[in-house]
Length: 232
Ligand SMILES: Cc1cc2nc3c(=O)[nH]c(=O)nc-3n(C[C@H](O)[C@H](O)[C@H](O)COP(=O)(O)OP(=O)(O)OC[C@H]3O[C@@H](n4cnc5c(N)ncnc54)[C@H](O)[C@@H]3O)c2cc1C
Figure 1 (cartoon, protein in one colour):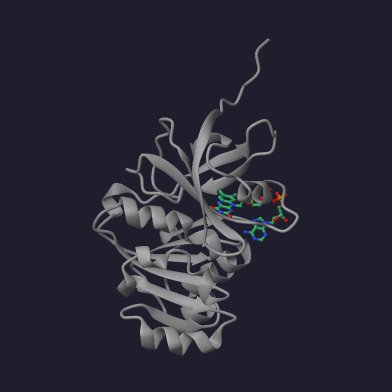
Figure 2 (cartoon, rainbow, N blue to C red; figure 1 turned 30 degrees about the horizontal axis):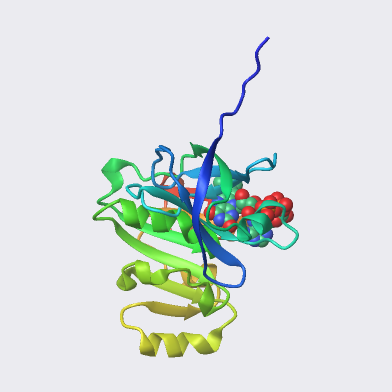
């Protein structure tokens, strides 16, 4: 009798880039994994049975894979990932998931709505799909959580700072192009309705996603134009 065996491969860690006290990017050997932008992989430490899902952060044509991880207090896997160093090994399975932009939709207006590390698949989309007409709405608590925003077109980024109201004016005055707002992404969406023809991609925690879905539907975005990846 034969059961289904999940095949994972060992991947060598190339580097760990610490962006804040708790958030970091792990880069590891790709080992032939092919994925569509927006998909995720399942990652664990070699020899540890626990695996967790992480969206691919790096662009599809990079010869490595990257994931953007927030350390969860008391979390089993994320705390261990934070302690990785070059040369350590990871088990990686995948890719998985259907959080995708279809080829025929690449020319359409797309709104990316993220909280925290939910920015990860959008980093991958923007780096992989040329000519994407996107606006990124990123909800963070404080300005240091603007994970590698410099990498996006600043004119397409709106950062909502929920616990750093003083930073809003300072950042807007010192940075060209990028826009800032006080409050949560859902506050911003309520007072700044998106074009109902847009495709809306939401990623992050489920509370934000449920609330944003209701707002977008109330503003006339049809449900079939709403796509979500729930992290927790
Ligand atoms: C499809 C998918 C893609 C994901 N992609 C990413 C990603 O790109 N980056 C990333 O950091 N995480 C991502 N996650 C979450 C990730 O899989 C883990 O749940 C997270 O790293 C915690 O794992 P852990 O073993 O450290 O915690 P566990 O020991 O599993 O404890 C989990 C507890 O932490 C909570 N939790 C999970 N994530 C968070 C968080 N970010 N903030 C606060 N509490 C949290 C859970 O609700 C639960 O209560 C994704 C989840 C899914 C389902």
